[in-house]
Amino acid sequence: MADTILEVTNLKKYFRVSNGVLKAVDNVSLSIRLGETFGLVGESGCGKSTLGRTIMRLYSATEGRVLFNGENVHQLKGKKLKQFNREMQMVFQDPYASLNPRMTVGDIIAEGIDIHGLCSGVQRRTRVAELLQTVGLPEEHASRFPHEFSGGQRQRIGIARALAIKPQFIVADEPVSALDVSVQAQVINLFKRLQKDNGLTYLFISHDLAMVKHIADRCGVMYLGALMEVAVASELYRKPLHPYTVALLSAIPIPDPEVERKRERIILEGDVPSPINPPPGCRFFARCPKAMPECQVDAPLWLEVEKEHFVACHLYK
Image (cartoon, rainbow, N blue to C red):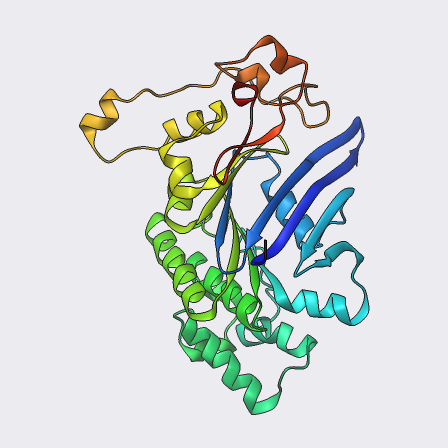
């Protein structure tokens, strides 16, 4: 599509471990459009963060292709690679581990500015002050160190650092999971305001489906390294197709006692298979309440069941 900024095709990321090969991301394809927020959800260990880091080139791809603005990310070198590093930035999950404790907040935020030679001196200080104000922090904080801040403030500093070099695309890897609930809402609202003001595109990774519902335009569901379903967020929450998505959504609390009492809660039995030795057919077969014999043998095809609603499930072949 003409407005596609990121296109991932058959992406794989495997890690060699002592007892085999861990298939963290296995044959994932998706596209993200300019200016949208694509939410990526799934339980812990399903490969969400690894996918985000492979897209960012923090990990090299085992197989597959990542196109950003038409350029193959994993083949970029020299000036093109430096330009890519400026156009795509990341906000990390842990605000306590992602900031250098030996650097002042001003130097942390300006690190990208220095690397790309965007400005110096008074202009640099002015830019840092502007960025702190943008994320709701006083400019005097530039001379302080990360340990002097709360988790929510540190995450705002991380967001300011990502914005410093005016990127097009931000990978937000569970950016609020380590924060208190009240602070989570503030940071989510900040993300939405920054997107509106700066025309940003987000890949928003989270295990919190209720939160993704409020920020994502489209949403993808991952399980054991593979995509199960992708749809417009409102459609996914209204009419989930894959049994795994249905089970995940049934776990979201509803703030209405009457509705909460009447609805069916789906409890998945069994354990997630090992990504070192995933099952040959559908990854979800062992835990699926609607599993059929063919699910254990053949991997389901990736099908567009309804407009912009894709699913990998034998129920819809």
